[in-house]
Length: 266
Image (spheres, rainbow, N blue to C red):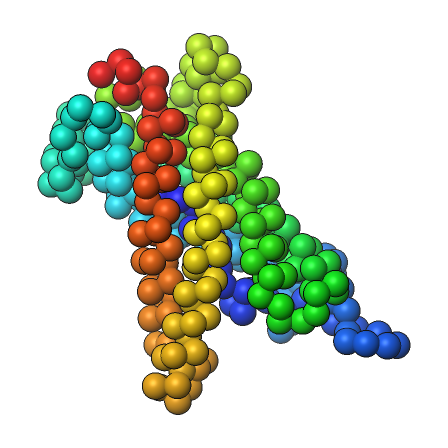
């Protein structure tokens, strides 16, 4: 599953502002800048923790997705959800096998969330200064830059995670997988899917932003309160579902690129 830490802009903390002599106030980002009583680094830490919790909660679903995507190369039938579940829990571990590779996700998701948040805020600060406040191009551009940077951090551990998730995985754990891949395939193997990941996540971010804002405005008109929790939750669910539907084909490519050596062995 694609790393999902691309939060619509309005849910991110606004940067502290200080008035400028002329024109609109310019955002100021620093470790000591505060928003709602919290510093920037505290929001980064909170975002990282939230990302790890989110990925941990959804990890069994991600494992089934990996089995379905990796188990359907050319000339083989597509695995059903039931077949993917049987494959995942077969052998040692049982249901706990659904969490195989979880440590790799934790090692990657935390830093990736922090990088995404940092790059997004700094890019938004610079682009907003040039393009004006509340400019959708500035928000989309900031999201793409943040995606490129955070995917560079997350992709190596995502590769390890997906190789560990496979039932046929020969690796005993994260460190064994890292050592073996480095020895047999080289450092480049960890980044084999990086370009595909960026090509997938950049439009994911754009579709997610656009759908979220449109759904929020529509639901806000119906509910007479655009800022209600129900509106945010429904708009977020609709945005995530549509963005995932658009980018799932590339996600399949990414999974098979990351697991290609294991697939060749089976």
